[in-house]
Length: 37
Image (cartoon, rainbow, N blue to C red; front, side, top):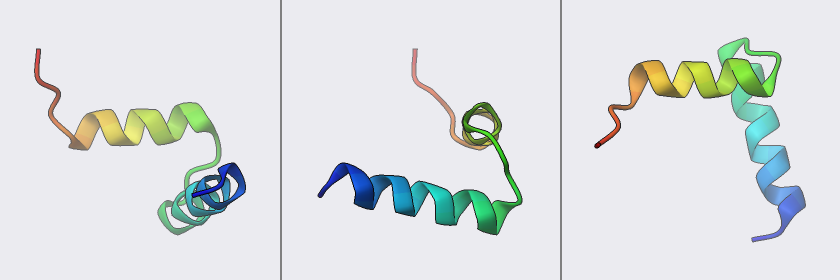
């Protein structure tokens, strides 16, 4: 998978979720995906 493909998928996800920045995307994920210590 190329870097461009990943960037395109990330952009599409952010558009669908109404998220603008990278930090907002990370915040969104951290609120919804439990992390193991």
